[in-house]
Length: 304
Image (cartoon, rainbow, N blue to C red; front, side, top):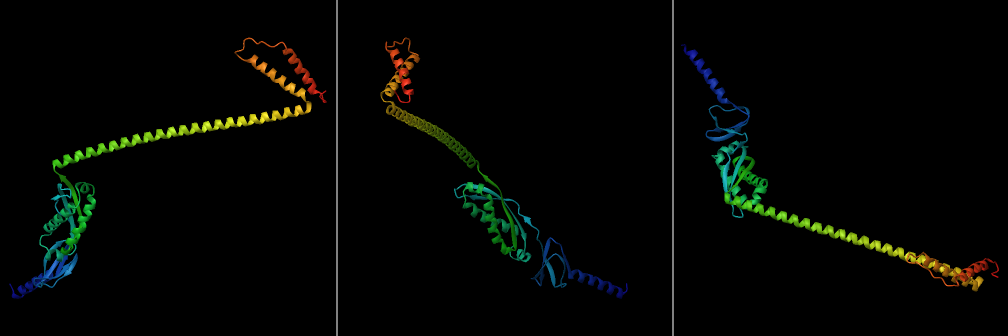
């Protein structure tokens, strides 16, 4: 083969190699860490990037997608001295590729170790019931502390989850007994409150009844008093009329009133249910005749 052709082919091959070494195409999910003479130079983001061939070298290809640690178990002791096992997982992503490769060698292991320490500290401040009822609050505290700790590694902790709380059988049995006791206490309280409400309602009903009876008695008394007043007024009016008649007609008016009352008394005796026989004095006819005569006298204008 001609030497010129060989040189030409070698030149083209070298040009292609230089072009390949001068261009780096980075996918959207990655970032490339570039070194020059073994020292960090820059981080290449997604797209086409230019390099100085044979001087710049892509040393690390870092995935920046969000990732999840495999679920792991952590044995902790709560504030009330109960040993439990927390199943935990952590979600994270790389936000600084250079820090993630130069500051830490094994990112998953470092995150797991840090998470165990933080979770043990957070769970140790709570009692067992608080851990089960306030899991979200504890997740938020763990997430904050993990973010602060992992920032130096160029990582962002997106989420931390306690997926399960496991206790031994003895603790489960104690929890069941406590739950049954709490249910019985609530039932007793509810029954007592119902009894108290019943007593209060009965007392209110009795008070209402007594109040209404007192009002009825008061109304009856007022009515009786009103009747007495009206009767007294009527008697007074009658007395005044009799007095006026006596003043106008003298003794005949007095005799008329006496005879009238005698007749009314005889009529009441006759209308009584217990009355079988009425014995009248012999002078009743005189009384009735005198009453008629007095009526004639009283009708006269001059009383003569």
